[in-house]
Length: 265
Image: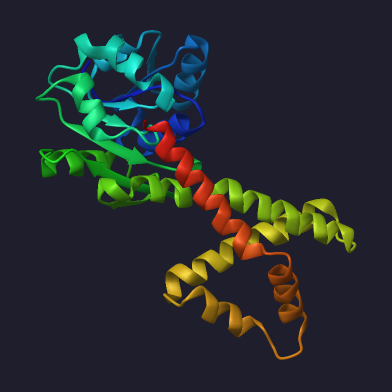
């Protein structure tokens, strides 16, 4: 049976996209493969999609091949899949590896796209960027957007901005988790039960993010609206400024960006 999407690699990021694809196009349209065949089989049984132990076998059974492997392994993975890629469309999620590099490996005539997701895609709240080689047709963009439609927000961006996007959105959940953990720890320190502190912190981050997206307001303006003169919030904000909170976040994103660029070399 020819399926719409094959996913080669079912790690954290690949697994998140597999789950989203099964919701979007149906598990009967998805086939997966992983070096750990048992891992792919277990996921397939849970989601209702198909699995195979060999990546080439999975690729041969689908129209869109999602390469969900680490950047360092991408070239070798493409080499192994090459005989099965004719007539297919290749979609990579490898950070830092350009469509030009991938095109040189797969050969001319095979459409190549790149997607950068984050793990929040597994619950439908991801932020994903989509780009492609210059000659990729609109129908290929549309098909990939359909497959990923249940992963979250998908935006097309120039490939020149993919490393920057990855540093903010691809890596971003890790930064936010650290913020939530720190807020919850502080809650426990001041007397809240652990579970309650974690819920309060996470819901607060969720609500603040929704305010930015739904109101369209600048984060600084939304922050100022919470800060009463001489109040507790501005005292907390001042403490963050004293400790270099914003500078630390900027440095984290910059470090991730530089690493993304290094991975592509």
